Length: 299
Length: 280
Image (cartoon, rainbow over all chains, first blue to last red; front, side, top):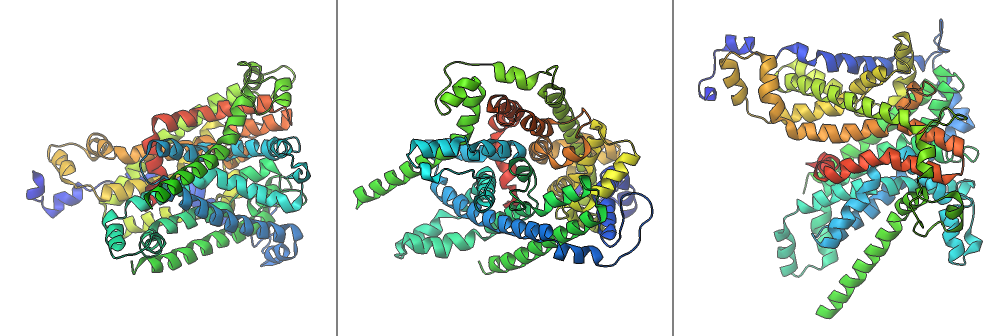
């Protein structure tokens, strides 16, 4: 074929893929993501109200964020939710992956079952769990059936149970993705490694620590990064289930940005919050990539 | 020893099955409650429905004279329209764009690729207000067309990334042969490249299709109150309207989730590959 006789350089250049092929996606991407993000980042340093002129006010918006109780509790809740959902999702997801790794008939039914909620809209999942946690909802009804009426409570209405109720909802929806990624990672490990180690007398726990865990490093990277960044941006479920309440107990940064901008019209302040969120996401991504990449190397 | 092992395995399977039943319980609840009358739902929330009651689906689906907003029928049409056109636009522009970035070996191509990758981490919230103003000045707020254009830009990073990395690994022989035969680059793209990148197209269709179908943040900002709203926003309104009348709400949930579940059942392999693709 033509691959054997490369065409002369001049013709090659003439046959290059034309740049205009990328014009449409690039134009839309710049208009929808790049330009608005840069503009948003600039407005964070102004007193812009959405219309008319604005003044540069330096870090005043960020100083306001630091002394705003709502903003600081939103930031705290966001980090708590991101950390806790990432941790639980990885523990449960890895356990499920180990349990469902082998191809059995039961497992081929259970795997899609655990993945199914990941395809539902987060809003829909929020609605489902709103019912589970409602005062006259499923959870309290089950507790009554078990004669545990003392444990009944309005799960989403109390500050100390609301945030964990939301965290469980998030884990319930996305643990299947974590599981699937771990299963893919497990199946990339050559069984001979385990067999050889078993012959050398290594126990199951030891093999898990010395073989499985190090070789799962790429899967761990993805499974920590995705839920953590997703957790920092939680919005849909919160708005449906608690609207950030009670008080600010489940308010997240993403929800507060939305409210400040589209309910109160505090545009500049909302973009300052968005800058803080962006920095959180970027720092989390960089730290995790650096740490986990380093751990991947020796394996 | 052997018997102990079997016993342990049996106990493990039992625990796993129990966990699975618990896990599936919320799904069971919504489907069964959507098929019960309000009285039956209150009396026996956990049992199987005594019959197939369709009243909840009627209420959720049809526009009632008293409440204009919470009907799912128009939202269903909007969701289908925006998802289909959005995904088609993403596939076409993403494959074309990825083709250039994969085949051009230059600084500019590398820089553009990195520029697209940046969009994978920037939260949508950062640019949401300027984007809203831009869309309003162009008359695109509250329109399905505006949503499609927004998704084509918003989801370009992952789409471009998938197509570029895949095409880079493809040999150029077929394209060169077609070019020697006098085909234009556009024809080569259409006849040679597009069929070769079908695996990526499947991933893009499934992953981005589900993303658009389920997205809430974008339509609540750009479509709320426009009469053009998509299903997630309509469900949100439905909850606001029916409060704790779970029958019609869950009927709405079943309607909104059915297409994604159908995709899952028929394209399971693509869904799993799409979700676990991050480490391949």
